[in-house]
Amino acid sequence: MIYKMLALNIDDTLLQDNGRMNKATREAVEYALGKGIAVTLVTSRHFSSAKRIAKALKTNTDIVSHHGAFIGTDLNKPIFVKRINEQSASEIATLLESFDCRIKLVHESYSLGNKVQLPDNMMARVVFQSSSRFSYPEQYVDSVSEKLIENPVSPPHIEAVFDRQNDLEDAKKAIGEMFDEVHCIQTGDRNLVMVPAGVSKLSGVSYVCERLGIHRDEVVAIGAGPDDLPMVQWAGLGVAMGNAPKEVRDAADWITRSCEENGVAYMVKEHFRKQHRLEFLRKINVIK
Image (cartoon, rainbow, N blue to C red; front, side, top):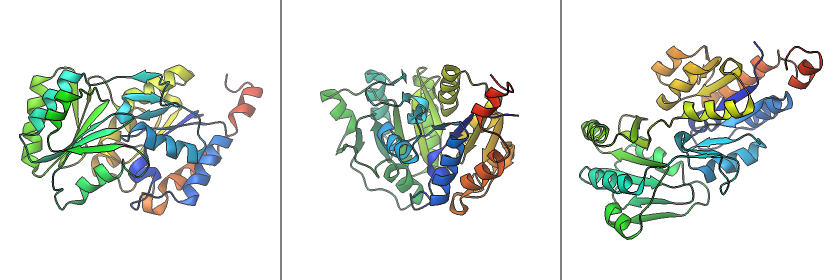
C-alpha cells in the first residue's frame, strides 16, 4: 500500500516525557515530508501550542487541535471549528465545581481555570502543564462558573482532573445524561475531557483527509493515548507507541518503540524508506 498521510499525536508520541522532541524525530518527520507525505499533527492541545510544534517541524498541513474541535493552519482562519455553547459551558462548570477537581475551559486563544491545589499525581500535572509550555494567556479564578456569568465563553473543549476516580465516573454519567450536545472523553484514570458532540481526533483527521482527497487506507496514524484509539483503528496503518496502554497496542497494526526510545523516528524510517516519493509515483502513473 502507498501512504499519503502521516497523522501524529503530540504528547507521549512526538514528545518525550520531558516535553522535548529528539533530533531523530525531527529528522524522521523531515524525511517523510521529503517523500511528499502530508504530515498532520493531531492533538488534545490548544491550537497555539500545536502550531509552535508544527512550525518547528516545518509541516504545512492543517493541524487537528482541541481533540478535533479546531482545525486549520492559522489561528484566525480555521477551516473547522465546533464549540461547546456558552450556556452548556457555564452549566458544566457549575456541575464540575461540585466535585474536587481542577477545571479548565480551553479556548484557542486563552484558557480559564479554577484556583485549587493540584493533587500529588503526575497525571494531573501532565494534563495542565503540557498545554502551558508556550506563550498562551491563562487565567485562574476562585469560581469558573461565576466568572462565566460576567464573561461567557464558548470553548472548543473543557478539561477536568479529579482527585478521585469515582468522582470522574459520577461527573461523566451526569454530563452524558444532561447534555446531548457534549461528548466526554476519558484520557486517564482521573482525566476527563468534554468536547462538542461528533468531535474527536478521528473526526478531525477524517475531515482533513476529505479536503486533501486522501483515503483512509492511505493514512498512517501514530498514537499513544486512549483518545488516539479510534484513529489508530481507522487508519490504513495504525501504529501504537511502545508506551501506549494495552488497549491501544492491542488494536494497532504496528507497535513501535516508546517515545523515550524515539518510536516515531524508528517507525517512519523503517516504513517510508520502502516507499518512493509521491511525485515520482505520479510521474510513472502508479498513483494519481
